[in-house]
Image (cartoon, rainbow, N blue to C red; front, side, top):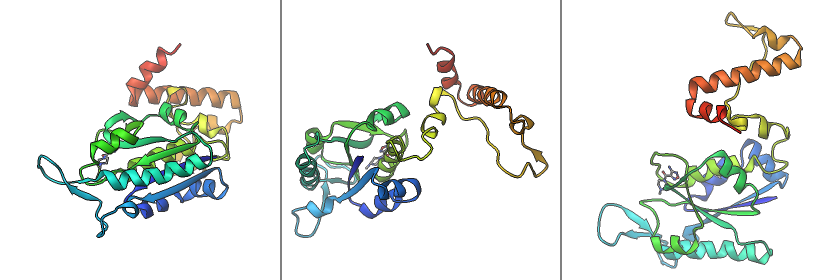
Length: 236
Ligand code: 4HQ
């Protein structure tokens, strides 16, 4: 059982997205839990304000330290009551290390993970210094908020939690296992738009099917991801 906690100004966005399909079933079967904490619920401002102008000037607003800190304390307190280790706090930011499959595997071993989603121009540095343990980016592009990156990471991590995927093989057989891309796949009918399914896949010879798939994976990786192909060729 793994517990995801998301500190956000848009709890309904992450709850909707993460209770769909496989992750929704994983929540229902209690393989994972997902909690969204609305940072706005923790502001001491009587008008519910959570942002303010930046010292030094410049465009845009910044999320203030107080509501972020108090929202984190509420979550950290509940984790402590369970007697679990304090959860790592992941701040999603383009300034972090770029997320990859090995990081997902490492994070999937934690009992609790806290994701901090910024909005506007970001969050007051002082609260980040006090609570953030990991800064992670999902790639070199600029989004409007941290919710989508948090959802991307949670999806990639949750599917590695034991029991989330029914077919236990699929967590390892897919792209990036072995560092190769996936081979092409086919389903019924045998002929569609004049295109035949590769006959070897209908042969029933599992050894030849496996060899063909590995060959296709290698060819695809060489063609589409020369960086991964180089790493595959020089693996120990
Ligand atoms: N953000 N990977 C949140 C991103 C981002 C990314 C921009 C983070 C806006 C408020 N986060 N701020 N790429 O684009 O993680």
